[in-house]
Amino acid sequence: MGQLGWVKNTAIRHTKALVIGILGTLSAAAIPIWQIYFVDVSNLETSIGAIRLIHPSDIQVSLDTAPLDLLEPYIPEELRYKYDQQGHRADKLEYPKFKLSQLDQAYQLAQAELLDQSDTNAKLQSHIKTINEFLSPTDLEHRLTEFRVSTLRSWNLSNYIDDIEANYYQQQVLKLTRDYATLHFTKHGQPLIHQTALAFLLQDLKEDLQDATRQTNHRLNLLRDNIHNIGSQLARIKQQQLTDNSYFEIEQIVSNVGRASTSFQPQAMLRVSFGGANHENIRLSMRDYQRNAEIPAATTRLISYHSAALKELQPSERRLLLALWGTRGDARLLTMDTQGTIYITPPKAFLDNQDNKQLLDQLKAVANKKGI
Image (spheres, rainbow, N blue to C red):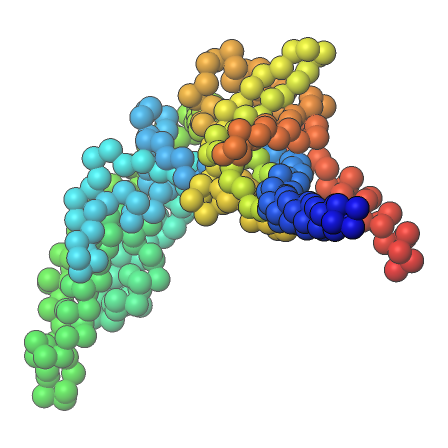
């Protein structure tokens, strides 16, 4: 009986040790499984931060109609000509294109010149009258030998004639009246100005100003006849270009409250719902995918998506989205991580920054609750 009791006690001790060993092994194995499936996982919360309809500022158009071509003189030369490496003006661009903002500015300058046409003519006639006075041998008050380049500079000739010709007249007058290295002098030290050459030069300038008067009046008369047409064409071009080249930009706020990182797929979709079960889908692409795709653990990130240009959509889709934009239609952003999990944001009005007031109200409520 004593021997039997000893065997029984020994078996119980070994069994207890075996059970404890098995339980320890199972516990050790269960810890990483628990961490993998219940602790070390990502946990994302997503929402739409903003929805914007972006109108590109770099759209360029050409002056491809006769009315629009009348705006050319009001566009800066550096936009209409080629320039060499030394900065000298070269050939005129064959088919230049201009930004819409530049055409708007040219249109405003054209309108302003129409209002000042009588003033422009008066200035040209005043310059011609001054030249006649200096050329007249009987006008003792305006002696040809006293004509100076400062007079030409004050006239801003490039407003009426070609820049190259305007600079030529100034250089020649300066050479004839102030280039002391080539001038001859009287015995009293007074320069002998070549009056015949100066008279011919001023006569040429007078004829150019007379031509400029005729051309300016003709150009401004054409401009006056077409100014309303130009405005209408610009408005139509802006509407078409902005509509065709605009695109939607969506900012997504992503908070990873889990303990593991995850990554998003580069594609996303914005579903705009309206009128019950009716909806329209907008395909999106993530900006800077290599940098923004990964969402580390315990971080919040702002991710930007953009659609294709509206001109790439079907006409019916484009018209519908533009009709919905600015309404109370609900928009939800759908994204997917690399594990295949789909995230759907709460609805947001299909408007630009409509939720700013709601966000401010939430901040105020928290501040009041905290007593700050």
